[in-house]
Image (cartoon, rainbow, N blue to C red):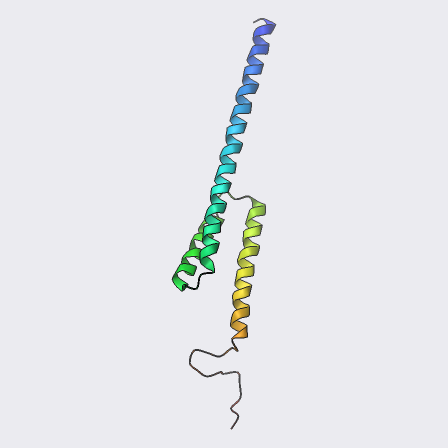
Length: 112
């Protein structure tokens, strides 16, 4: 096989590898973008006043956050977001005075 044919073959193979790499990168970027859109939707639900909607947001958030389309650094970001929201919820509960739904506070002494 002449040298010109080898050069043409090598250039053709490099072009195919370049196209495959570009398509693969584009697919990964699209998948990550769609995952972040879903995560944004979920986080919007998690802060809802409606308990059912907030629970749905957390369930879907847990599912979307574990998809293989999310990078490790993005997973760490999602963990920080989830921890922050849970910490805020704990702070709100702590500010409520610690009283139970039964109307009595078991941590306080009887003033009589």
